[in-house]
Length: 257
Ligand code: PEP
Image (cartoon, rainbow, N blue to C red; front, side):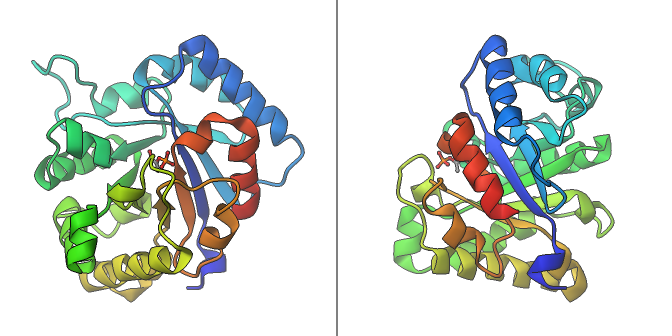
């Protein structure tokens, strides 16, 4: 399968930004900026804070824009104060969920084992998963990026079936590039995304590896998106800061189309 036949996915990660009223405003602006565009070549997702889901789902209803969440718990219900289950997200109209974002790993104690549990729970509930993997700056400097990424992919996807992989997108997000304004070069992004594809081929065979959407994320913006998205192994982007500005997010969507 060639890059052209894989569906490009551009997803915004709003992080801890926007009230429900502001979410409605931003989604309205994104929809207006994309009016009349042909979206057949690109899936567009806005992953929003839990409290914005209702407003976001309403604002995006009947449009090309899909709504995602930024995390979910692995249990269906129970004594997990502050957590949200995958079934709850589905009940609210959410279609996508980010799992294993580096900020969750860095600040909230997420490990590959908990990421794996969350991935499986989200898939079982019928959500599409954007699974984030990425190396720390020290790991890149030590020359162990490919080993780290391959290990993350293997642990995070343990027990995920080939059939379930149809609903998995992998986002390569070098931790040193997130929110820093320092993006990986297009060649660096392509090399690691190609390595992820090779790991998927080991786990699931070459056909599935070729069919899987692999995004790059880390300071992607309106200026660098065309070069990054032009690479053969980069099928889309997970975008933080630039997803909060309708014109910049629209430029990135247009580059992916
Ligand atoms: C992210 O939050 O996943 C991200 C890539 O952020 P930024 O684009 O701001 O680096």
